[in-house]
Image 1 (cartoon, rainbow, N blue to C red):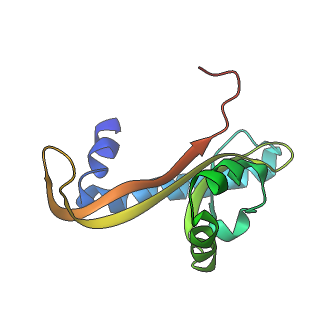
Image 2 (image 1 turned 120 degrees about the vertical axis):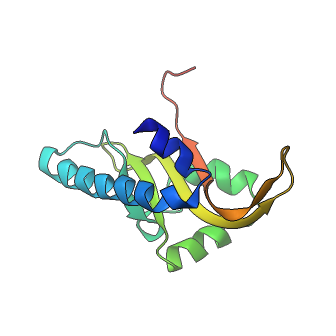
Length: 130
């Protein structure tokens, strides 16, 4: 299974299976959160369910010009994101994946034009980690 997921990052033929697997499992995890009242899992939700004023986003707003406008566009489009929250409902981890098409020519070797899965935004609040 791990190999299947690894190839999905570069091969669009695997992406649809991988994303369906990932997001269906996230929905199951979301149901488990309700059942067990636990926040120790990652859930599938949309940008509009994330509060831009959560302290988690402070560094992103500070470091990336236009972050708030970009976030508003993603919220309006109800774009999906993977989030982990703490017991107080504050975001602790955030992963936005997107599909891009086209050649990638700013790396060696150049990657030919095709559909790819890309990490758009990934941030975690580390707790006692190195």
